[in-house]
Amino acid sequence: MPETNAAAPAAPQTIAPHGGTLINRFIPESARVAAIAEASKLPKILLDARQISDLELIAIGAVSPITGFMGKADYEGVVHKMHLANGLAWSIPVTLAITSEQAAQFPAGSKAALTDSTGAVLAILNVSETFTYDKAVEAQKVYGTTDPSHPGVAALNEQADVLIGGTVDVIALPAHDDFTEYYLTPAQTRAYFAEKGWKSIVGFQTRNPVHRAHEYLQKCALEMVDGLLLHPLVGATKGDDIPADVRMKCYRVLLDNYYPLDRTLLSVNPAAMRYAGPREAIFHALIRKNYGCTHFIVGRDHAGVGNYYGTYDAQKIFDEFAPGEIGIVTLNFEHTFWCNKCNGMASQKTCPHSPDNRIALSGTKVRDMLRAGEIPPIEFSRPEVAAVLIEAMKS
Image 1 (cartoon, rainbow, N blue to C red):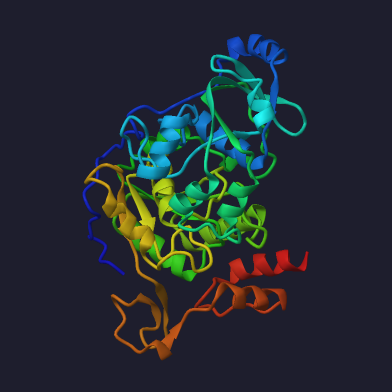
Image 2 (cartoon, rainbow, N blue to C red):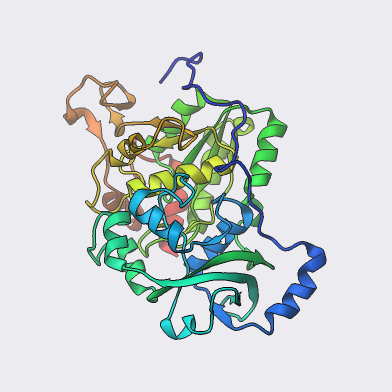
């Protein structure tokens, strides 16, 4: 592990949101009654869970400078060039798909009421345009494949065939009834960092329980910065990922027993998982920049799935942007493991011993052990975390 006086790569003491302004698309309380009355007379568009997650990201400023669902110029710029129409770096389309029959109801300049499955109105969409798009092109550019087995491509293929763009005015988001105290907005995390006096903050993205390798990366980073934002993604994930409520219990028990709580903040990212590998690494970094992080950990196969991406493609993609264009310092880590000869966590950069001494259990193997009620080796998982997972597997 680095020495305690190690310094992280240079970063600003405070970091501006991407594009310079932290977006807030919530309608003021004083205008909500009028907005609800207006929305009741508008044609409606039903949002699914993934689209609601995107709406929340827009509303709270997590995807600043985006103020609504992308129009054609931004969409094509992002898909083909990884830049918005104004030239700002962006890697993942944030779009709303509707059917061609619906599109006929929404000419440019019209409005739509965005609703959830209960019929509750969440927002008003100020329609700028509707346009068709090529799913195969988007899949190849964003996901690097058109394979329908890829979960991101599968979700894309299930979308309707027309995209509708425009800014959103958000009335209210569905209430979160799970670990509600951890849903902090970018404005709230920034205020927390300021209150703590943290000038440098490293963000860590995860959709899994934190195992020993993750812990090693985070603590290496904590040697270099003032604070850690442990920021698990809790939007929609694929079916065999561990549910968010179970993961949150794992994070809490791990932090309570093994982390300096005065230098760590646990909050959640409401985004849905895309599994877009390198492109999603950029997306995740920009979101954490908006939450106030100055640094971001990028490990092996970040946001990957299956064998679609190279081990370190998610690190290399940052080199495709001009210096300072992303605006957050990435901390790149190699594959880490427990080495019996080192008697601790290590990577190929630090361990001189043969692979025979290294323990790196697969996720499949660990899940099989947990289902059998077996506690994985201490070299892979803290026993407190394993206990939470075993209990969850039983139920």
